[in-house]
Length: 293
Image 1 (cartoon, rainbow, N blue to C red):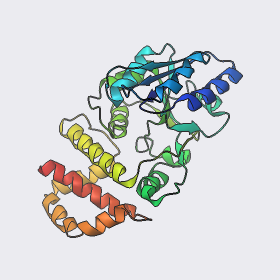
Image 2 (cartoon, one colour):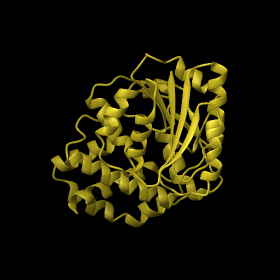
Image 3 (spheres, rainbow, N blue to C red):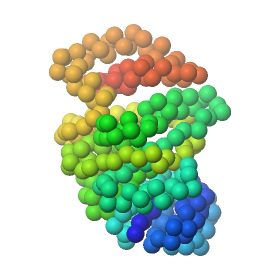
């Protein structure tokens, strides 16, 4: 019936797998749960070995780091069922009927995206990632379905096996930020997406500085994919803004103007209540500089 696939890296996946196993057993469905650690050699893997004692569940330790996309592709290739549910290891189902909500959607779409909700961090050092996630990713399904290719998140979704393998095989990058590419390839292939309210809880988020560094990697990945024509049809707002500046020959002007407010932008990124419009200006400034480099 379903394969539940969890890419891991230096994280205790047992609590998540235990919850999913219980829900699957209650439903009395055919299932498997596969976790693959991407060569972290973490001490947490001693705890993860307990996953092998759970019903239809297994934990595999890779001896080599193959990257986020290749690890997901390996999980998909090792799966045996037609429908795959992918979950990030640092998430937890928000409802006891989480799996049932997905089962009820079988054959009602090729890609089913459940969404996410963010738990507010206690420390303001996490303010940027939290506010970005809360404002840009924690979106009701009725809003997401109005622009289905814009709100793509790979932390919690269900997809047909052969379709996902085809998509992942088309993504060459192994760095952060592949949701941009994932969404554009789905749109390019004309694959039907359905968004539902079946969220996972995210309470393990990056500190501001780490999130900024990951944002840089995502933007580099984005512009590389655009320049290499991997991304054609898309719903990526920041890339559209970049293209408009490029067409109007205004990139250098935009960079010079926004560089005048560089200190303001940096203070905003690390503030208690960051302004996401200023963060967008920061990201667009960085995107334009990548092209100029």
